[in-house]
Length: 402
Image (cartoon, rainbow, N blue to C red):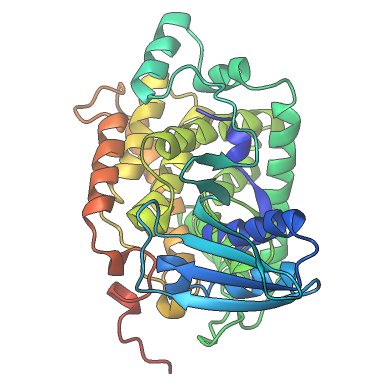
């Protein structure tokens, strides 16, 4: 497995696969052909189907258009075999002669790949173990926890990086709680985070706690939907779950930043296992790979904070993912708003429930986390394409604007 720095990416929303990835691809292609006078960019499959709602074209144009003319070609019915998020860049000189064409894929979480392998970032394989069971066995033999395995494998600057990740997550919550008004796009969807935050103060402690978790998740997701700075955890579309859970626990239980950073390390390890053995791309496996994985990450992080054993942490993560199996990716109007924002809030609450459920057990259970990851991968492959970020099925089908 690669570094968890490749999972936690700091950037702007609304979509890691449809905005961050294509923008990075445009930057790379431009660096190869700064002399070009025009570009064609063909978007395929999911990128084309929901690209306008995800601002894919705007992200690419923002990079290329200051240097040359840009023509975006939409091919939503053509799915390239390597991945649903395919795109081909073509560069031309002043005589119209093609300089190069390059096909690249945005594979989720802001990462890029060609059919030959990953592009950019730290592509070193730094984790010797790729499955939860292997790592759990290591924890039980060594007496150490998951975050200590992360510490052993990562470079020494990992804690500085996670500190930056945590600072960015907290900032996105605080900004989101202060914002009001309508999110960008044709849905005219009003922000809810500030209202939830204020209303939660009127309830008794148990309901107030849940209301605050909702507010924090909504705050980050609404910031993402408006193009604000967030952290992929593991994606932009699911970026509200982990920060909401960890911020709530720090605020209510006064956990130190150091303990939060260790929880982030464990959460990142969980996400990394899924990314390596299945997928975190909604276009490839549906929303179970985004919000479901985020829930698993947050469940494990919360359980660790409350002193869970390695087996209990694994169980919490397993429940977080298992109970999102089959969740479709069906963004209304191609926007990361309905149902994405509410799903982040519900998944944050579900993560706390998974932590609580696991804490009552000894961690022994029948279905392993690795098994659920395998099932999620197969389920995602079995889902028809209209349920995988194409905006053609599920809640997105035949949606009528008010």
